[in-house]
Length: 84
Image (cartoon, rainbow, N blue to C red):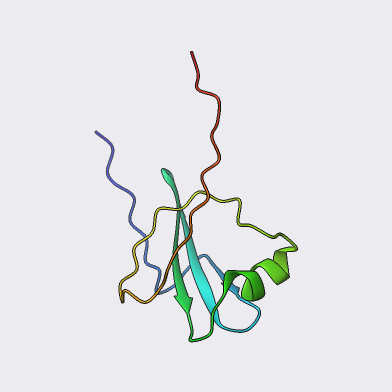
């Protein structure tokens, strides 16, 4: 059995900064990508991320934990064809 991946987000491989209110630290593992998002007061996807990306909705699938119970997350689920 292979050893699990381990990386620290204290020294991320990539850091992205939102337009006004926050940032995300990103680490890439063999099994996927992990990010730690910091949202400052006043953060809104539409103005802090959407304005940078030019998109009206986020198209990325997320599995998230809100450690401080401060956010409402509206997840839009897009169905995909299943494999047979």
